[in-house]
Length: 185
Image 1 (cartoon, one colour):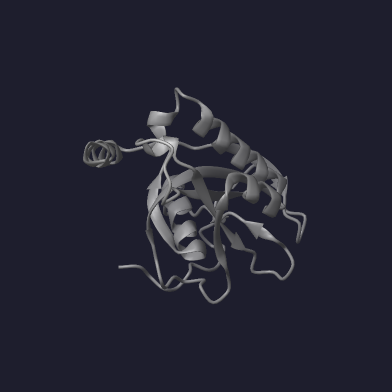
Image 2: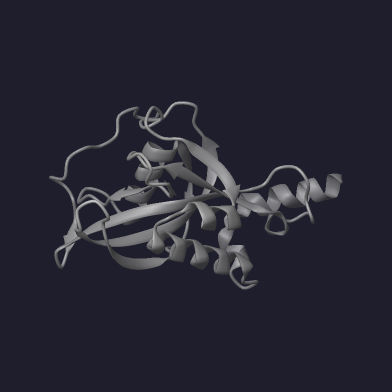
């Protein structure tokens, strides 16, 4: 069951060296339809971007504060569900970035993770405040205006394109499903 209310307040917020700790995800899926090959990594990847709650601030990836009562990955998954209405497998961290918020010049430290989407919800806590749009990685590079998120997206793309990293982007169930699908083709 999914809670339909976002966490609010900063009383549990984590800080490090005066920087607010932010976690987020780049939700992704393998595009349905035409396939170049049988394996998922041979298919085109789409990423999910969301609108900012502030008018005119463009598209971004779901992110928010990491709180003291949760792990980094749990916080990233919670923020992604609250803001984008998707759930899935949080994978190995893409990296850490330091940046200033555009609204109040506060220092932040952001950590981003890929999230392989397994479920897209019809109802989620911030549905009334945000739009979500699936797009290609190249389209997301054009739409996203936050430099640190663009750098995370580039790291994600590099990881996808690295032949040695591809198996780490999938889970065992995906491989079994692909073998069954290919044998039926």
